[in-house]
Length: 108
Image (spheres, rainbow, N blue to C red):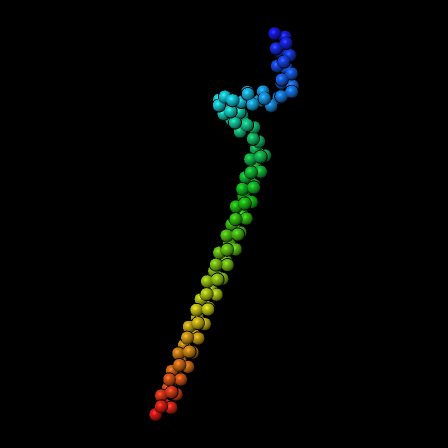
């Protein structure tokens, strides 16, 4: 029996990870370990996580604000281009009318 204990001690010293693995096979122990770990989370860690979340939110909101401003600027540029295109169409239509009138005068 003493030889068996020596063998177990030797196994524990040589392969400590085996004992940990074997000891964690029961689901109840895993859930208990998880609960225990969750309870160990300090308020400083929670505060740090909250701060990180707030920092990410602020960064996201700033990026969103920049994109919205770019979208507004692009919309304004599009309206200006449409107005310019409308003016060019009107100029082209006037030039075409003058051309047609000149052609009609030449045919008479």
